[in-house]
Length: 318
Image (cartoon, helix red, strand yellow):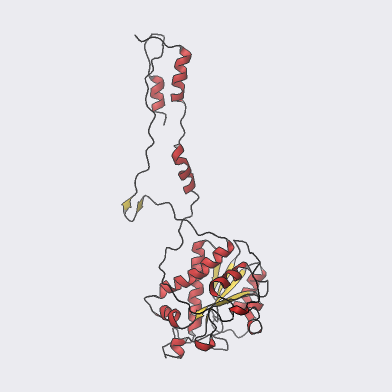
């Protein structure tokens, strides 16, 4: 018969084994808590085809403004397609080199190629911007010819109202081909003052002076204009080619979205935590947390027999 242990010593050895154990292993606690905060989707999981946007605006050297105003990271952003409401009238946009010089058919009858690509690019910018997490949307007037500039349906009216309510408005354009075009660059808003977004777009694409052509209608109403490049060469070829069109639109839109997001200090979404299976392959099981060992400790009882009840209780407490 084993020697009796003092009751106090026995309890001191057994109680730690029957006290509750933490439900999460200390080594796993941080990753398990972190996964709940991760966003649902990663940004950039779409095909891209690199596009050479050509020369920057030759008027960049005449820059006479500085974007200092810093909007909130959640500022509402309105994306507009240049010339979407001014077809078959003065100011309908460039036909592009392919149509005007090579005699190619327009992308859509009754619409300049610039207006066509402005619509697709502006819509894509809003789509990718939402994937990033920006507070962004696209506006299409739906009517391609509106003679009254102050009609509430026009880009100018919608953009002006948006800016007056504290938002940021950006109108997308492609510049004229050949000598008539200046190259890529931002024409900053005048009403409301230039922002850090305008400054970042200048760093990325080049710029025009704020009083270009005596202050254009959009900047006068607080709408920033962005010329993505001349509608010729690599830009036009990759947009017109069905095999590269989607990737080219994604590339151009991504350039704009990334520039805006970085200017606002909005980080891209992080990858999501993998599901149980990825691409049909089962994930490795999570690490197993070992149960504490069962230790038999003789404890004095009224009948003098040893007992393992305390140790067994610790083993089944997980």
